[in-house]
Image (cartoon, rainbow over the protein chains, first blue to last red):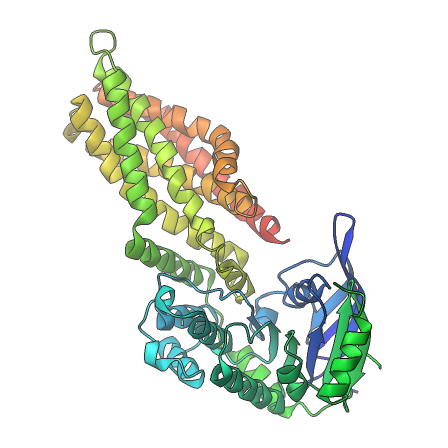
Length: 237
Length: 250
């Protein structure tokens, strides 16, 4: 069996006495897409930030392509992070934001790459508009273009559908499916069961820092999974 | 219900990985310049921090001017202290913006996730801050000269050296503490509290050197203070650059 692209072993993160992520283990290979569900405060974002090298683990280990995290520039070059925060600079235009990212990732023709990424996300018509003048949905499209500009092979997405309208969500789902089919590894944190289940090869429900359910394909259909989800989290307000 | 996935073909992904591996990451200097250019472009567009700092400087200098009794203290004795105290506090406004501007949309996460060294991020932020404080000094210095009737022309060159050396020290230390304070709830208060004690040797040396130069003494008389500033800059640059990566790892 090949080396997992994303691996976590007994990964733990505490904030004071609170265990945000509690001994989570997972291994994902090329072409895998893990959808991560759970209530607010379940530890999904913390887990994602650790996998992205943005947060150190208190205990346990995590690796991307066999390199222990947080890793160095070579590992970071393979990863793309989408967040519900746009991670954009309001005073810069959409194009300038994406181009800045392309430059940091050493793209040979950063402006062309930025244009291509914006076009792919259907955001080229407002490439020269300052981000602060864009709607939240438009900003999210630009943010995703910024993430995808260097064609990452590992995509860590935290609530990527935030602010997107139906067309935007459809474009994003299509892009994720395309990347997955091309062999990228995706971890998607979301409350949107419908979009995520249509994409994922793996699905997990997190609660109090732990996986309380982990499915691999075939994953139950939406109505069945929704019922399971509600049942598992029935006592959560 | 196993958390281990099934094995899948990865040929396309491997190709992407290979392409990524051959793509050359920017060097530390190149990445730093890219980051500095971005920060300066944002400041140029908004001018929010610069205009605030200039307004603060002019107001502070004016307040000192009206509180000054010319019959008790000669302007040549007062001006260096006023200049450096004003400049230090005004500069803090810009230093806070350095990392504070990354916070609202968590743009700092994208910066830290990029394949550039942490040192490049620090250097880039520092370079942008240096341009900011030097630009600020280009307003503060003439304003001080006008208000306190100080002849700058004769000492312009050595004074520029004092300003440059002091600015490098202020920026290096200030950039580090800006990164440290930004994740706290009282960042704007914490930054001066953290940074000002470390600014003391800079302000003393720069103030003394400025006083000697304005008094018409030869540059050699200020050499000790210039050496102090230079030494402080080198030590601060090394220590702060080494400390920054561990500081931002959460």
